[in-house]
Image (cartoon, rainbow over all chains, first blue to last red; front, side, top):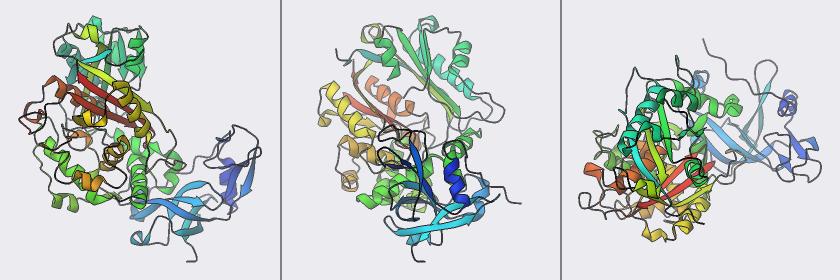
Length: 136
Length: 86
Length: 295
């Protein structure tokens, strides 16, 4: 009997991002005034404080900024995944996202490695944007 | 006007520490506070400010320890009361 | 810091700072860790260990650091804990081999890089220098204060491998105190993880990026070393009382009340006149620096 993993926090700020994920698209907020792309989503642009926002689609390509290899399950639902990699991924459009690095041996992971999005079907039609080594 | 050398730390309160089952978070706050007051050589009534460090979620069977609760159980009505000391 | 604010405002005469927690026997620490990065829990990313591990890994990429550096911190602080009867690890010496054998928690951190979970409490009282003169113990005065809060979560943060808030906070505190870094006799550094000690000392300017490993060789931070650090054993080896573990140890050292671990002839160190203390919050998101001296 495995415990369910925690669902994403979907609220007024984050809904558009997760709606995109259902359609297997990485969508980010772009400031209509200064053009800054931001993530995580929020009401205001942290550069110019404008609230005029549009959603733009990202390519899904990026590089690992940093990563951590979990050997302990802080939530029992992740026990069967150990060891697993949490990564900060710098997308080529600019925003940095917290995700998982999959299809990669922990010993082979490296800061700076090229990665691409690998959609992981979650529960209730939700898709999680994870990342795998580019071209793998 | 510089704050340099204007303020001093005058008492430190310790409690038993380590693996101490059968106690509460509130109880540890109160014991540490009472010990610090005694260590400084103050009377309880002298204390007119209380700042509790930010806390953690309450454990099973505990309620959240607020600065109100700590002040209440120390018998204090301080002028200044706040959480998060950093 | 807030206590000094209300004293300066004239609102209070004696401010009590308090911390208590059933961190070891209760389940609240796990609740905190599970809740801290709730936004990212969907990816199995939780709490402080994961966040600081991301910071430490990025640091390994940007400059020369890693387990060999952190081992010197974990083993060095344990030597202080072995002199402190209150320390949870008083009777548990740590060798280099013990560190190497310590299990991974969130790589690059082993269990030995993580702070303790503690049942207990700690408190202290802050007042004006004038009032302090009439009390029981020799007062310890706050010579310098600095604060800087980069605030951002690890994901958007640019400060994971430094400079963290410690850079500006440390500069502010030294400037207020009117002293040079070389005047500092000991440090009590907030050490939720070994890497936190390295990046804090580095941002305070005790060594340049990646020079920590060389700087730490030969027991620099240990009993008898040239800059004793975390002389109670710290959060890693004494007990976890947030920023009150380092702050109260700095106070007790300057009061001369530290028994076997009292800096001076007993430990082969200079009897301290000035001690620098730090406190962090979040994942390197807040930083406070306090320079203490004898009043």
